[in-house]
Length: 399
Image (tube, rainbow, N blue to C red; front, side):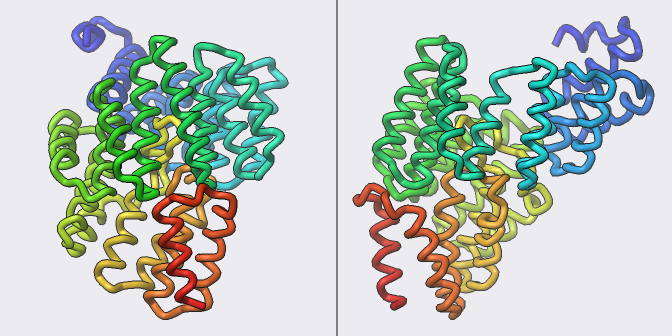
């Protein structure tokens, strides 16, 4: 990194920026990046730049939501035309299910004639959380008017369709997202759309489709996020060989990366342990992830969120360990945090897993309710989805 080599010739503020950028973009050690930003903001309190960095993933990926909110407001006070300050603050609010404040933040940006494509994605997600289909259609249409980012919106629509298990339609939207990204020269984005499709299919029990999308994603990219999503998708289907190879590669290439160390590898290696029926090892591996599970780790996926995957895997481990009540607690965590999960497939599947955990623990009344919630969500779903067939059979036995 050339800037790092020239660091000694830089001004004090420039050195802060160089150190931050190195930790944020090269090592991806967010704890160090956060410390640098804090010192930078304390040293130059009227400089909006460190405050802007602290309102985004530097804080949000460490689950420092209050700090990020405070810094977002400070950034807007210092520089009211900084677009990403509004965007990050709005994301911060909707993650915490404060949808009115999220909308209000974006409206403040609109009043100042500030607009970036990411705002429409956030508006689309807020509309989804409010079950406002008309607004979802409007924001998706506006987003697709821009050819450089239309794949984002096809990806969002695919995720939403899959969430209610309109899987055939979701596959069509995913293909459009992938093709749009490739036509625009965005190979990495196309890979992420493929990886997202692989995850959806894996969660829903479609192993052949999951593997097809996973291999297609790897043909396009071996980036951090693509490798993680592919490995997780394949591990969901019981595959351990390639996921283990990819996990080892992630650990080697991103040894300091906060997301990899605190979320990606613990969840992936725990899932691989479960494939070998080792629930004790899985539970132990996931201990490090607990404080960060509601963070924005994983939100780089197009149409995927991934931040609560460690909780999902921990729930699976507790079920395997015959600890139904604790498993239910993990799935309830996912159900309770819709703003964090948005349209990620675990938001839907968690209802089914919650029903299973409650039934295992002997709470049949609540188990029936959880199954009903899942079946209501998927009432118009494609009929040949493996987990839907299983869910209906399991629910019938509870009657």
